Length: 370
Ligand SMILES: Nc1ncnc2c1ncn2[C@@H]1O[C@H](COP(=O)(O)OP(=O)(O)OP(=O)(O)O)[C@@H](O)[C@H]1O
Ligand SMILES: [Mg+2]
Image 1 (tube, rainbow, N blue to C red):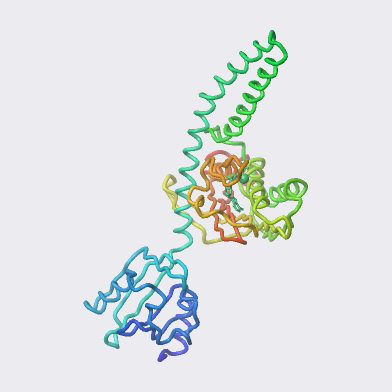
Image 2: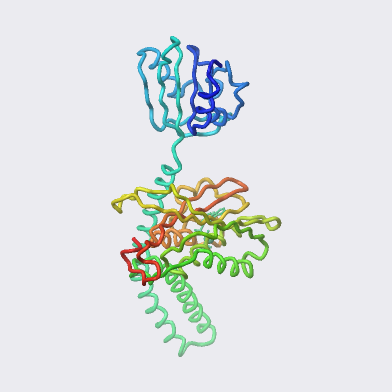
């Protein structure tokens, strides 16, 4: 292809797609990232029209025309490349005229990074946390108090009711109790004073979760564990973290098939994860990763955009509070949750900040955790 071995190996090492297109938008050169983007090996790509991979009305082609017309470089952001052949990709593109060959264009495509995607899910999960906190306090005031009045009145009536009426009084009391229990479950969402934190080894949390799960609701599932034993401690609240992970594992157990269900618990230290969080001034380093992966049905497409909101559920008897609580607990720990899902493989990933050095061994204070 007229490119030296050295240049070629450098281009192949890039995560971004680099292509050289001739004046008819036929592929003259493509690097390794481009092969995977187009899902085709380069022997079969050479000489092919780019239009057979991406529909010809894609803004990409307008950019290529602009480059040739003006001999200038053109950049476009957040362009969606989509076709049955290559799937869906959100990219930023840069097209530059080839220095040496008239009509040729060098095209680079950068897939939007994982950090971008997390940022989007992050915004979603934060607003879910806010709205559910408001809802919880509202319920506590507006539902619980009147209910205790109703319950008290029914108990009074019960005293001198005949047997058949007594049954109805009991029914009122029982139903009132059921609603109070539901509201109490919501109560954990209201803005509570921050939890007592200490230095925690995530693996102890996971061990507890696995024990509870495999002796109860997840008896039918095989667990796999991939742990990084050198993971440093985090500054957290043990019971809340157990609760959050139990909710994830419970969802996983409910999604896997009755036979052959698998759940993989994983921990890792990831250096690169830094997120810009609007409400906190600086980029926050969140290197502790804990994930729960299952081989179940996958998350229904239509609820993915609102997954962390309360009452979003696809289960006949679900309350839809499980993930809302996960989001709230992880948010309280200064971390984030993200997911990615397709049939047969769903992963929930929690990213948490480290415990600051100064706090290890000392009683953790609220500020240190933020
Ligand atoms: N691992 C998973 N695989 C497939 N779908 C999932 C998974 N985790 C969550 N979901 C989907 O997300 C929805 C919301 O989950 P969430 O835990 O918040 O509520 P729920 O499980 O429906 O009810 P509850 O947790 O109160 O019993 C679920 O109903 C399900 O559709
Ligand atoms: Mg659930």
